[in-house]
Image (cartoon, rainbow, N blue to C red; front, side, top):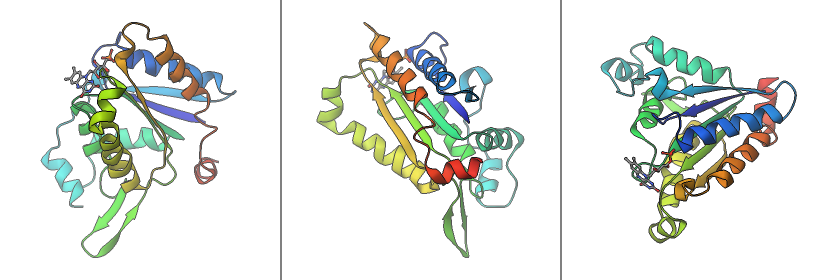
Length: 206
Ligand SMILES: Cc1cc2nc3c(=O)[nH]c(=O)nc-3n(C[C@H](O)[C@H](O)[C@H](O)COP(=O)(O)O)c2cc1C
């Protein structure tokens, strides 16, 4: 089993990268043959700007540009998709949002045309979300920010495409004083990543 771990943070020494690395370690420890690869969007220079070429794909007038086809191909090679990101303005960073905008395109993530009913196309792809925020749990609870994020991201994006969100974790306080607990939580997510794969996804991967 293979996991694609997408990280959206410009600083390799950030907690987000630390969390991603520990999660990957957990995947490696989770069983013989289990593997992972990173998609470090900042280091790879992914361009999150939604262009006319992307709009043509959305309108089903063109095939995806090469950079998007490559992103879709590496997700297609994975049995699980993991997103690790810092919370920016109570949501994901623009870099990751642009990746979703461009990669989760019509005809690949879902199927929607003028004369056809909408179809979800990612039912085989378990998704694990790990967000890292600087604010306190109290602040999140008082304003309903985590619920808002779940509505927009878990439901609005992944459920729209049929991808089951298996993990939806929020690591708070940024672990500045003691990041060990967050890193340990990340390793634990990695260790159980494939244990929580739904049967339909396991069958699709077989
Ligand atoms: C532009 C920006 C916006 C941020 N917005 C939020 C926010 O809305 N909620 C929150 O909890 N933390 C917010 N933060 C704090 C980051 O989530 C926090 O710095 C980060 O998770 C720390 O981990 P890192 O070492 O991976 O950067 C923001 C930080 C930046 C730079």
